[in-house]
Length: 626
Ligand code: DGT
Ligand code: CA
Ligand code: ZN
Image (cartoon, rainbow, N blue to C red):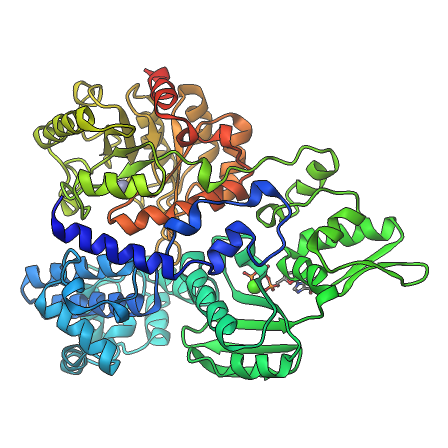
């Protein structure tokens, strides 16, 4: 490890601590919100968790990616193009806000040199990057819009712009649906279909955004309200509190003796673009990012009832209200009332709602009317896995492939999170763009890991690989290589558009290999960017059970697959599961919280998740298959 690494980490820790007590820690620890269920408290986290997807970082990453696209259209130096893309990737997942990071610190981030650090500085100071503005002027108008369509690359965008003078989405949609694109060089009917799919995804993406993007924005608003508005209590509600993977809008509840002032602060927050309505008990605004935020100020003795009501889900609440009616009670957002004389019997605390119905507290992640009420009635609610149950991360990349750190740096960060082990799973040779490892480089890494393990105390590295399942269904490495490893994670990175049988067949074949331990990101989706591939998940889970192959819940906020619904099915079938972050830069270890939230929404308990096991038991579990 070098001095450089230490400075970056020291910086990140400071940032993390500064961000303590914020939304996520309150969501996880019950600091502000009255969470009664002790299993719900995911301690440990506030120390290590800090946010990614920070707004400035995201915007700069977007601009850098667009610069890369524009440079590509101009056929400029491929190294420069790659530099922009690499910098974008790393900025996106940086722990600290770039706006608050000094230039010399920025330059220690992998991929950022003098030139790009200067551009970031310029953006922070002036809100724009001159070179980017000029680049846009040089190229036809509307190219940026075309490039924002998922799956539409620079080459096609340029072609459509030049040959058909397409300048906006409406035109693109019309041309594609009238088959006026096919016939252009390189464009087939399939391309038209994909463009239409991309437009659909773009439109849907405007309606619902990934949790990983919205949560930090909500956190920022709560923090500003806490600092500037006279609030006694604040809580997030709605789908964010339930940790749904995508979010329509942000719902916030507050208690205050001076609601008017609270609302005045709220509608004037710097990130507010439009005010939809402003009243003493409810105000709604639209943020710069296009996301709506509703803030409600409620009475103290109604706070619990309002929290339950606005946390939802709607279908969960409907069930509760039906139960209440049968018990001669009435539940609404103000409290619980006796039907016969309207006497209020609860509502200050959220537990009241469940207590009056004779139910234990139901964690927000379960409130989807997916059997949780029956389970609560019968006393068989799951004891949900928590972040502090996680003992290690089984999907981690180093800079040998497309990660940004060496093993030592990863170990230090993993230890900070209280882990006992991590698995090094670099890409295999077939994945050229990710600098996938050849057999020789993999075995070299295996040797290095052996040497490091000899020196380590109380921590272990697992020697692994993320072996590519090729388009033809074969694995990238032969068995005599795979059998030398502690863990083999197999996944699909190509041939996403193959048919259902073919893709299912590839995954099944991988699982039938005795050395494959885990199937990673099993549906290939990228929320808002790429739909899942066609796959028969029931068949995949059946074979996973049969062969003893684990299925991954990938915690990367745009992946989050297996999703909650399939995670629950997998648990019921007895399929072993792992929760992994697919870390490429150390701040991404923090994504584990998102993975755990999916697991919780899938009813998983500690015993259902392999990486809650200590090192010895984990190794035993991994060997069982072979
Ligand atoms: P989303 O779509 O990500 O915003 O999901 P939610 O669950 O946050 O939905 P939202 O924002 O429409 O409403 C927040 C909560 O408020 C919802 O989970 C339940 C409650 N709620 C909203 N509208 C109604 C309604 O018409 N009837 C009932 N019973 N509850 C409602
Ligand atoms: Ca909502
Ligand atoms: Zn990976």
